[in-house]
Image 1: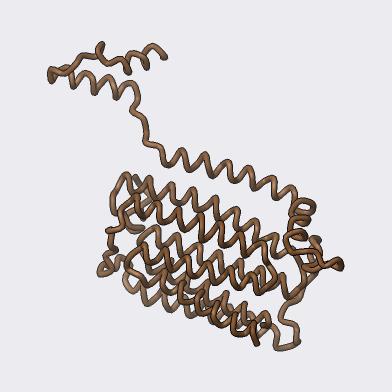
Image 2 (image 1 turned 90 degrees about the horizontal axis):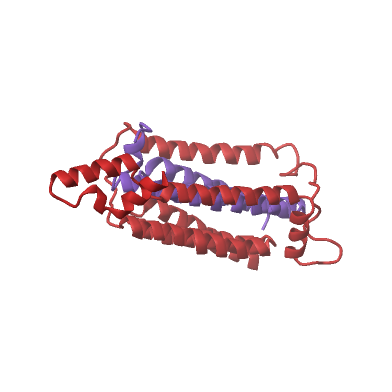
Length: 99
Length: 212
């Protein structure tokens, strides 16, 4: 397969993730959509790594994975703290950024 | 021919899983769709000669991260259905779909309009890290490991700091705030008024006061 097919797939995946981030209001689902977008970018990195015959793209994906893991830990901690204070909270309930 | 079939199946799984994440009502179904999507991406990684990253994708994403999501879902209760009838921002959903379509359009235009002048879809200077396949025919994981532990060693060390910060942050966020001594004293006073055990009978509070 040539690189264009992977780039188109990654663009579609990124857009689906961003649409989900905009239309869903459950914080956990929004978080899953962020992960989808990160995966789309990872796919782009690896596709370019193959196309350019360069290991740098795969190294970038490695670091993106680490940062994504850290981000998920902190984000889920925030969601748990939010639900402890307000059970059943959606993203709309915290739009004022006030406790 | 084979790689076209593999790509078609994996791309279908990836996109179907992604649509499932945003379309499913039940958050658990969304998480399982996320597993399918991540697994499809892992198959594509194998197709692109990123064998180590494919394994890491399965282990970390579909293993650890989605399990963490499910853990939080079960902890918070899976019956929290989303009230989709309320639309706090007028026209948010049609606007979001329009923004998504526009985003696809912009990205695809960036891909295909830039190559109208030349045959090369990608240009640029090779990075310091070296080629994907070297002359010795070493496996992917060895080349990737050499790049991470030589050229990108400083970034690798920094990620350890990042992970420690993330762990500390998660602990701080998840712990329940402990009542302060004055709050405990107020509680004990209220209990004494109600005929409950007096302040002196609360050994825990005495320990706190002694510590101060």
